[in-house]
Amino acid sequence: MQRIPRRRYTDDFKAQAVTLAGSIGRAQAARQLDISVKTLANWLDASRAERPVSSPSRAPVSDLESELERLRAENATLKIEREILKKATAFFAKESK
Image (cartoon, rainbow, N blue to C red; front, side):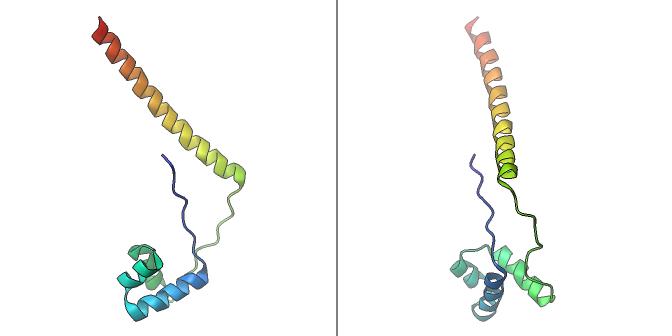
C-alpha cells in the first residue's frame, strides 16, 4: 500500500484561503483550492479565535527517518503476508490428505 504524503500549506496560502472562504463560502472555496472542507474549517475557526493559522513548527524529517518509517511499514506488510501464506499452506496441506 502506497502512503500518500501529507500536504503542507504556507501561512500565506492559509490566510488567503480564509479570506476567500469569507467572500465565496467555505465549500466553494475548498473546491476551488482543492483542499478538504474540514481543513478550511479548522483554519477559519483558528482565525476567528484569533489564534495563528500557521502550523506549529516541526523539526524537518531527515532522509534516514523517512526511510526508516517506510521500511517499518513494509516490514509490517510483509509480516501480514507471511502469516496469510502460512495459513494458506496449512489449509491446502489438509485438503490434499
